[in-house]
Image (cartoon, rainbow, N blue to C red; front, side, top):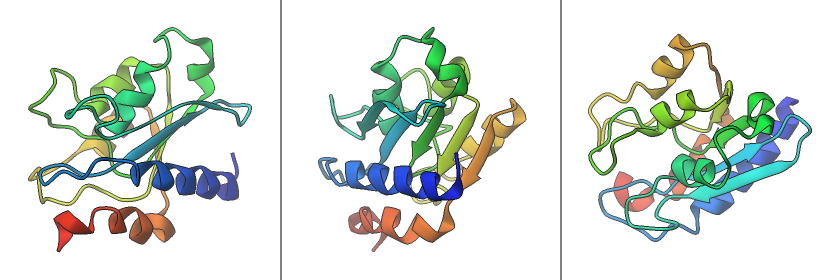
Length: 150
C-alpha cells in the first residue's frame, strides 16, 4: 500500500468513527481491514453491536480467524489498539496478535485519559507487527472525540 492508499483508508475509518454512539467513558473509533489486493474485507466501529465492543474487535469478528486474506491484510484504526480493558477478556492488541494481520496503521496514540499507559503499539511491534501512524490525520480522528478531550 502507498501512503496515499493509507490516507484514503484512514479517512474512511474516521468516517466510520462518526457512527459511534457517543459515550462518556469510551473513545469513538473506526477500524477497517484491507486485503493485500486493496479490497475492504471488514470494518467496524466502537459500540457498533453492543455498548462495549471496540472498533478493531468488531471488524475482526466479521471474518473467520483463519481467513487466508488476513495474512496480507492491513488493519486501519483511528486510535491505537487498546492494551488494557475491563469489559472483555481480550484487548484489541491481543485480538490482532491472535490474527495473521502483521500491519496496523493508526491515526493517533491513545492519550492517558482513560488508560494511564496504553502500550498497544509497543506490544504489537514486539511481536513483529509493523505499526505506522498518520499524524496528518490525528486531528480529524481526535475531533470525533472532542466530548472526552475538552
